[in-house]
Length: 504
Ligand code: ADP
Image 1 (cartoon, rainbow, N blue to C red):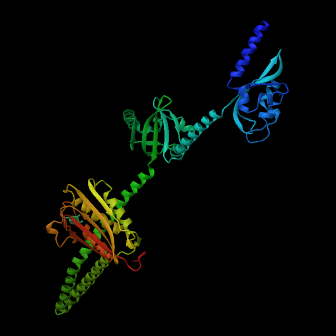
Image 2 (image 1 turned 180 degrees about the vertical axis):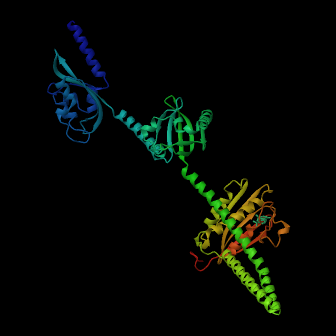
Image 3 (image 1 turned 120 degrees about the vertical axis):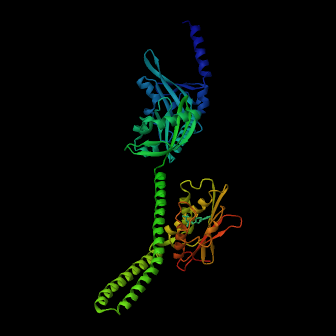
């Protein structure tokens, strides 16, 4: 190369250094600055004059980001002199002349002259903007991860092509009892081995609609338990890959609560049957007491007549009659005991909120979809006192009245039922109002009698049971035709001195 060529090359190098957006400076073996390009001056705030000849480490690299000292011997820039290697660092800071700092990425390359290390050239870049973008990305990733982990639903991200799990949240692991690592090895199909056909159908409708909700799936947990789930699934695109986001709600508690509600309902029916038997026994007791009294009277008369016969006859008949009287008396006692038992049962009373009783009982009466198409309104008074009642029995009354109203509404096109609770002086009342056809004429005056019914399969005991329960609680029940059609059944319960919140 001629001298002119070399000069030309030097000019080119200088021009490149001048134009570079990255800061570049050279160091000798002692770490003193040999040259600085304009970008390095701009980025650090030091002029070339202020830097040349000075140890660069002391000017711009003396401390770590936390302010602690950065010993020169630990500095990778200087390491380039000792080990002859290129050192690249992406997470340090440089200090400006004004005492502020900026994050840098730098490369320190040893300068060799005839195989000997004579210094290093350092090229650096202010990465504030890149860091900010990275931090923002990390923050947004962290935010989404936190949302995903904080949700109460199990989340599964699955690839459409092969059903492979791409992500799951903690709730999914918890619900199924798998560690994240194990769950990540599963496919969507693996979670429904017992219902592949349902899984297939759900997937088909999902791929067609792009989004679905379903209660049809259950997931198999690690212990083999089949967990009923309510699933919302959507197809989403992630970096060109078609994925499904499954959000699954564990329905075990709901299913359990439903089971309990059904059991409660069957308990109510049971109470209803027990009460019906009680009613029958009560009716029988009433009816049987009279003939038994008559038997007693006749037998006693017989004995008196026989008293006048011969001695031998007299003795035998009299003995038998005595026994018959004793038996009849005993039967009477048993029956009256039974009647008392049926009519008075205070054992199960406790302080209860009437509004709660009414809400629960009406929910139960509507539970099996019987009230489909019925406009059902419930209007509860505030601040009702707690009442000392047998909760199940009062629930049974409300349940019976609502079921009767639903049944009465069968022929009515725009069905309406309104339940109201209210308070008046020392009474609380509950009324069940319907817009049905009203009372059948032949029931007038005997609506609350036992065995009175207009239904083909009715027993005609519901209302008489309601009446005995309400009267047993010291209340009253009545039925009235509404002015604009339908019936209102209303019962009252007294607020006794012992009832709580008994103010006003
Ligand atoms: P059951 O429901 O077995 O007939 P109930 O004692 O509960 O026994 O009812 C007796 C009768 O009272 C019913 O058959 C029905 O004719 C009448 N009834 C009850 N509730 C209503 C109502 N809301 N509207 C019209 N009639 C009713």
